[in-house]
Length: 321
Image 1 (cartoon, rainbow, N blue to C red):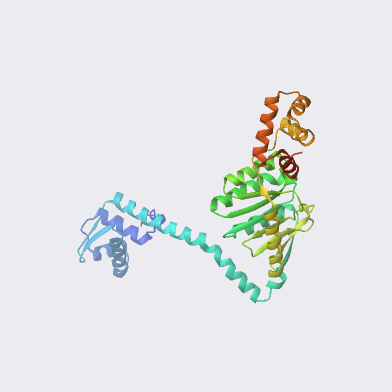
Image 2 (image 1 turned 30 degrees about the vertical axis):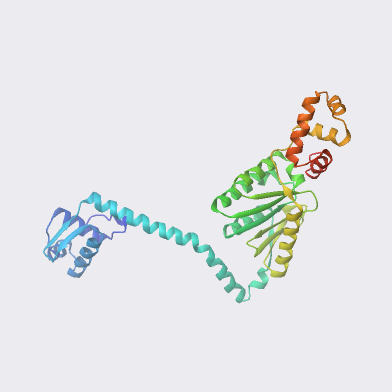
């Protein structure tokens, strides 16, 4: 009996053996198939019936069984197999919702109370925990970064966040202005926005947290040192307070716009805060009046300010000066 070369296309060893025989012996009867292959009549008949359904043979009664063109048969099998695999992949991809029901069973079994507060030790474990919780998040992830963001973790965080955005996960992220001083973080914020995330910045107090589907949260054990670890929180009352806190911080934040200012722009901002007249500002910086006014106008547009006083305040809030 030949090797089962068609197994990947969903054809059993007996079915492939029958198909090969029929190709070599057009018009063969089912009884002859059974004798030649050394199998029972019922097995041979079942193989012919399935091969006929798959379009691999034509059969008239018990006396005439003929194989169809192998090229067309294999192409048809491949299409059917691919369609079946696509259906399986969709089922697997949609299986994340099963976790919710399983977790409910776990809580009903008495283990839930001990899991409402879970401690995660070390930065590597925190990053792994965020990735795992993000994987099972179906709708929205809320994140705050008080800053600074550790350079060692930034590349890994970037690749994973962009992956989840491509998957369709909604993200709202608040960055502290001190984090944006780092050009890598500022570029990261721009990448997130271009990928569809909402990114804002705040100058005041900002707690470190990540909230997944409004059902699970992760907060730093030490707000000033994420490397010490974090707490995973599933307790409803604590979650409600964290959600309210995030929304308050979101309301206090403002949009993150573009790259950090250049050295010359920072110098112009510092002079703007001290000098009223453009002529004096241009003279102090050693540039033409036209160039100075051009820098001032561009900075005001970037900061969304209608006058220089507002621009100075906005620049200070963003930690630009």
